[in-house]
Amino acid sequence: MGKAGKALRTVLETYSISQNRLAVTMGINRSTVYQWFNEITDPSAESVIQIFNALENLNPDAAKEFLALYVGRPILGDEPS
Image 1 (tube, rainbow, N blue to C red):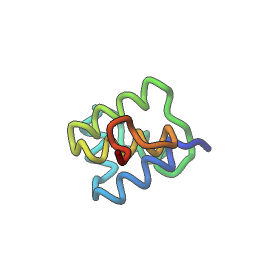
Image 2 (cartoon, helix red, strand yellow):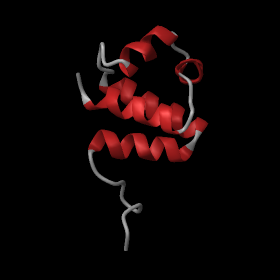
Image 3 (cartoon, rainbow, N blue to C red):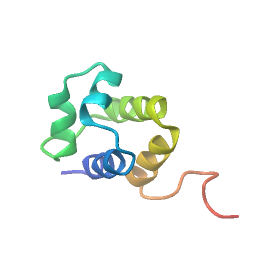
Image 4 (cartoon, rainbow, N blue to C red):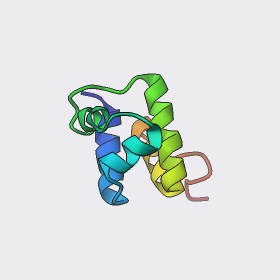
């Protein structure tokens, strides 16, 4: 499957955010997050934005890392000067 699942797994594990906590924050079923986390299904583009927004609410650093991992490069302003 795609990069979103890998990025999500890395971020949730790194920042100790449970799948359930993310699901509750997003207002979706935990099974949906489970499917993304385990790369069974890929989130839609709209869902990737919702994941980012939920992570930003839970931990802004986790949101930045998710986006960087998903896009495949550091976020503008995060790279060394």
